[in-house]
Length: 223
Length: 223
DNA sequence: ACCTGAACACCGTTCAAGT
DNA sequence: ACCTGAACACCGTTCAAGT
Image (cartoon, rainbow over all chains, first blue to last red; front, side):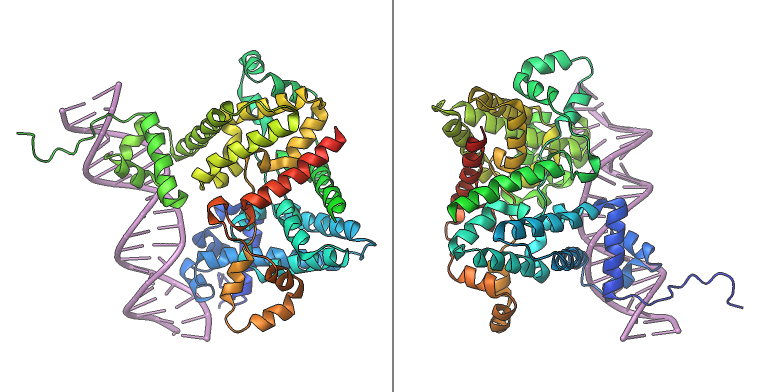
């Protein structure tokens, strides 16, 4: 008798199911699509049902940051402990980066709320430990974390995409070259063409590693 | 007869007045307070009146990014052209930073929409020119801009504020020290105490300059 | 214990209408 | 040309009510 339409959720809701669905929704449609109403729909429930399992939307956002941080911790736990602090730190960071490449909405969220995640703190704790074992003083490690900034977690935020501006100008390209001679000169020599390794224009894999190595080499010298 | 209550706006609205009010509102109450309705109220008008002067809210956000970028360009135009590419670039960046210290909401917005601002492009163009004159190839300049990231504009986004987590834990501080021995060890040696120079915990003036110099020194070596 | 419907106070934005 | 009021389609969230 109940064989026809019975779209009740098989499994009951839970904080974990809500967070998993939130991550999946953000992965597929971006952060902007992550509304309480849409999230509930994805789970076959009403928006208000979510509030039994999470306090408020902020709680969901904190939760998915923590979930990504745990994914990072799981990933870095599997990397071979390299010889020397530098390859070890480098490898950890590049491994963390791979997680962000799977969750491209995450950098934006980490910028503002990663301090609430104990998983993020555990990630940093291990990084501090590695550098400590590598002969750094706590003071220099502290400076190093500041110098690395978000790079310690594996991403840099993009700041501008000159290719966009280039597209925008139709025939005024000559005028643009006049106004921005150096930028146009530089960009005419350069091409980015590996979208899969790119978190926005400024976060190309090759460029990420270049910047990372500039900093790690600099820290090495100060050690 | 019209001597009593006549709170009509003296000056008519204009795109410029709208943007100025938007910057002032964000300065005083943060980005979250910047809604079309609140902005109109600030101008003594109705929300819908704004749409005669700006296309949509996105347009307002693009506009205030451009306004801040112009403020930066004005500021850097006044700095003495230093001798050598490094002091010149360094001074430009620290001057740009001062503008962000006046508009603490701006970094968040620049992260996502600075590519739409021609003023930002002009800022970068001058920076590229300085480095070019300093003997850098376009290719290395390009790498350098990636390595600097948002630091080229004078800010780094904060990633975590361990002091917050420290506050949060009341008596479980011992447990925290057990779980995060390295982080707790490091932080016990360190204190941040100049709130005026700080854009969030990770963006202390001293730390900003440390990180900047690590990168500039590294680029110098690659020149 | 877990979920829901109706309702509230907000958003950005459209559109026809006022001066 | 410039501004407005009413209305629409969305938000997050509260609360009393259902099972």
